[in-house]
Length: 244
Length: 244
DNA sequence: CGCCTAGTTGAGGTAAGTCAATTCACGTGG
DNA sequence: CCACGTGAATTGACTTACCTCAACTAGGCG
Image 1: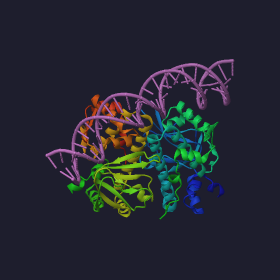
Image 2: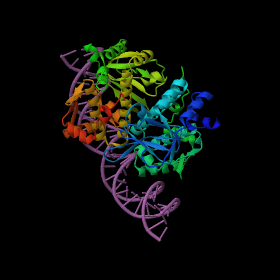
Image 3: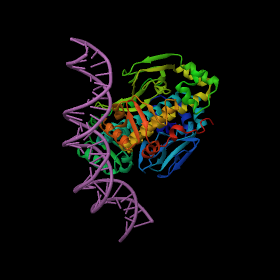
Image 4: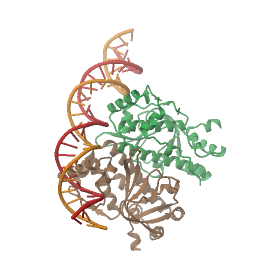
């Protein structure tokens, strides 16, 4: 039971809805069908008609869109505890691609199993719905950043948001976190060139705010970074009245 | 019955799921509680706990986010037939504001009525779900534009997308459409300055592609514009196997 | 050993921003 | 009826944030 309680998804959902033993057991059942994928090879999508969604158990993933001129825009990264392709199960379509950044481990979730689980425990359904809505809020926040924030602010905001998400699943703390993203991935997520990403990172490091080096993000001045980024974690945290 | 079939929402949904007379009648019932709002005054949101969503019947609306430095990013515009605040009914929260651009007429939809309607006709539920997913796809497309397209391309893409959406509800055709948006609104949606929006519009006009003048968008060279914008309407149109 | 990928840094170019002035349409009140 | 104010569009001059091209370094691995 301990192992279940510590699955990233259980941790994440548990932070917002107190899940009972029975609900944790149902969650654990969803984790039965384990699969592994290697980095680089696209995992889903581009108009595919897949019947399964996945829960990411280990590793990092990015969802991106390819534009006609060959450039790429990363819409979001997924970390352990996140769903992959949840929407493309309901609708038979997807407009963006999903690619593992590292080797990943996922649990395959069949649409029917998910619907059954929801029927058994409405609280679980509410928690998953909350998680999906949080993902959407992140996309909106991302959009606002691309449209209206300059490069350093955008970067700072991104690193803080990622830190918050990782902390929720026990993969980081206030001091920093391990992060396998390359500067090229950052560039495609933040709408910058890789060269400029490098310069921005150096700038933030020189200012004593964050250090991103050798696969680790270190917060050198957390409050300062929050101030620069105008970061308000409300859209990630809110303990709101989820269950009426 | 004719009046119902011509409501913007019915037109939109009807383009993707053939709705029966009975289903149209159920849709019509949702339109009973009519309300009017004036332009400029925020209609919902900012952490409010509203129980109602709205169907926009007439007028234009924008959903925006305010950033700390006072700048504004418009996430999306809503036109007749679109839902307002659908998500904030399910969850008791919303991260962005909703403001009418013109005087608008809406139908208030109570969460329970919606759920009842869905229970009566799964096909209607599927159609609404499809519409919600299309909205999400548009946000993703918007995000990609902000990150990776230059100003003229972004503008062209935006005007084409809007044209497609309006055509679906009978408010425009291949030649153009009426459009109450100001250049300031365009700027905040496209992540540009108002001055630059003006220059970009002049450029597109000089190139003989589109004319945006006196509240009307006129396509002077539709194929040329599509080519410039790399516009693929698949994510708006797809007749996909929505109902398995 | 040599190749490949990731990161780093410099020089110069360009898309888009800011500031500022002007025009025009409009409504409103003296 | 005209003076006035206000919001939108327009245009010019100048600035800047970010891009592109290009060269170089350092680590991992066959």
